Image (cartoon, rainbow, N blue to C red; front, top):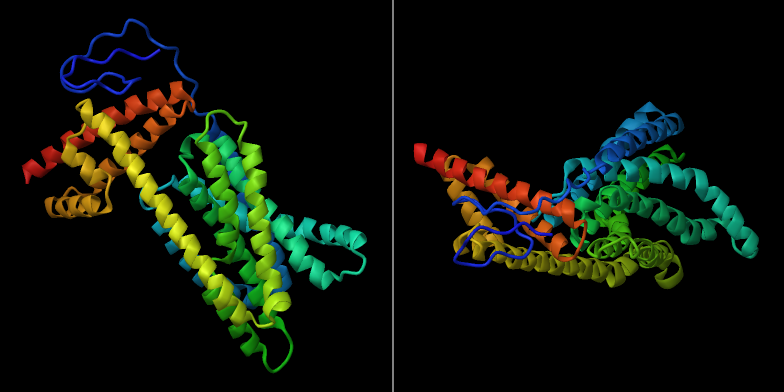
Length: 401
C-alpha cells in the first residue's frame, strides 16, 4: 500500500512518498521494512574469488611465457583493453554503473572465464571429436569448442551479477555494459597468451609475427569478444525489466545462441568463407560493428526518453522544474549544466545531482514494472531526500561565491 501524498496543486505519481516543502500528511499505515540488499556481501565474495582465480591464471601465464615475455605482452594487451575501456565509458556515461560491479565483471572475464576455457576446453574438444570423427582438433577446437565454452563462461558472469545484484540492472544498456566489461577482461588475458605465443615462436620472423598478431587482435579487432558477449548481456538486460525471475534463464540461453554463432563465424569465416582475413574483416565485420554501435546508440536514446518521461512525473508533483527535467534528460542539457557548474565551482555536486536524478528515474521504472516494489519505494524515498539536499547545497554554494 502506498503512503498518501501531501496536498499539491498537481497529483503525484502513484506510490509516492512524502514530498519536500510543506509538511506532508501523516501516513495511516506504515509498510514493513523491506529486506535489505543482501546481494552486496555475495558480490564481495564473488569478486574476491574471481581475483584469486585471476592470480592463478597469471601464475600459469608467467610460468608458460617467462617473465620477460609476460611483462612485454602484458603491456601490449593494455592497448586493446584501453580501447575497450573507452568504448564502455561511452556506452555507460548516461547512467554509470557501480564500479564494484564493473570490477567483478572484469575479474570474472579475465580470470574465471579464461580458467574455464583452459581447463574445460580440451575435454570438450575431445568429446566433439568422438561425435565428429572426421574433424580435426585444429578445426573443431577454434570453430566449435572455443565459442561454446568461452561464451558460456563469460555469460555465466553476467548471469551471476543479475541474480546477485539485480537492483543495479535497469535494462539492456546495463546488460551490454557488464557484458563488455566481462569480454574486455577475457580478451585482455587471452591477448597476453596470443602475444606471448607469437613472441616465443622460433624463427627469424618472430618480431613480424608479434607485430602482425598485435595489429590483428589489438588494433583491428579489440571489440570482437565484446560484440559476441554483448548479445548475452542484451538478452539478460531485457529480462531484467520484467518482474520475477521466470525470464532470466530463457533469456540467458537465447542470448548465448547469437553470441556463440557470432564467435563461430569470426573464427571460421576467414578460412572457410573468404580465405582472406582482410576481405572477411571489411566485408562482414566492419558493417556488423557499425550496426552494433548504431544499436547501442538507439538503446541509449531510448534510455534518455525513459528518463525524461519518468522525471516528468516527478516534475508534475513538484520535485523538479520543467527546466530541470530538460536539463537532466538530454545530453545537451547535461553539458550546459556542467558548464554552469564548473563556472560556479560546484561541478562535483552537479555531477552527483545528475547521477542520482537518473537513478531516480530508473528506480521509478522498476516500480512501474513491479520489480521488488517495497525495496524500490524505499530507494525512491532516499533518492528524493538526497536530491533535495544536493540541490539546496549546490545553490547555497553557488550563492556564497
